[in-house]
Image (tube, rainbow, N blue to C red; front, side, top):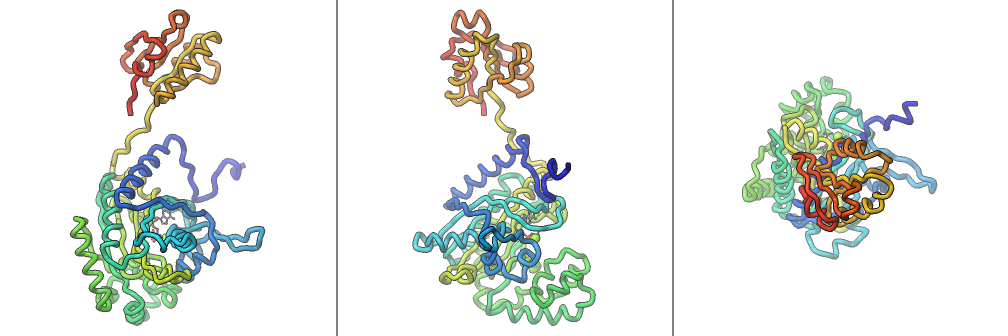
Length: 421
Ligand code: ATP
Ligand code: MG
């Protein structure tokens, strides 16, 4: 039965042979986020559906047709989180974190769920690293989260990486622009794809972001938000660029970056690798000055990003970037027979206690089988307990790469094996 042996469409196991790549990215991200003063936050996978309807916006693709929503046994409408920001903002309010240090700077790693058409780099369950800065209007906060992503992605070796920035204005200037855009689009309405026809009324800015070539052609001639920014937004967009220059982060201005979620204001940005096709956007983010108020809080501004980890892994593999291999076992303790087993278990325990990756056969193999097993698991050394060794309370440490052997007392075995990262 395929239902029993196949994961749901659009989901993927992360098998033990690949998990080292995830652990590597997680370690790097944690280090960089900590270095920038961001603290980790963990929020539930499920939230009240209303949080996303209010937070992300009812007219977005995500809320309209991508959410995994169900009624629980208590009759509540629950949704698997499709992104991380709304949950972080909810936690910020519920935990009264606004009473603490301002700005509050958080990072997270989350699974996200969206009902999408699965393809390379587009899954129904995917994972994101994200950061949020709550409580600063200053564009240096925007520049800082961008600099963090830039340092992380460049440090990993992402090839052909570009940072594209835009401003999508604020409630003062965006409605004016929206009208201009709709006027322009009305002249091309019949040529728009079906999705964009339905976007036209509800969310016309999304037409700029459409992936269909015809819509892209139409978008290329459209008026741009940057020409319609109010004085404050124009000043902020200039300040963002000054901040990025100060951080030493290179960028391009791209008026077509609009972002898919309604809560964004002013800064919008994407990191794109041109190494992979349509799914080359590894990171997207921006400022959301009205999200917290929308959720019932005070007027607390915010800025952050979400970075797709599966996409990042795709891009890294296309970039030929090196991910350090998982640490191999340092030693397999090989033992002759039943009599040797007690001593062998004590030895493996002491090796583990010394911080080594040490293994022992748990499948009843004879000695020859144990040596084969050592090869299979890539053990760097074997610590052998044969008849002789037991009598003299010593182990023979054999280096499996060089064939070299030394006899050592049990208590010296760990240092004879040594540790290699
Ligand atoms: P796209 O335009 O590619 O659909 P998006 O605007 O929906 O992206 P965001 O909501 O901004 O994406 O999410 C941030 C990042 O999360 C994206 O830049 C991407 O790297 C990743 N991401 C989004 N949706 C998926 C998905 N279905 N599968 C894998 N990664 C995803
Ligand atoms: Mg999307």
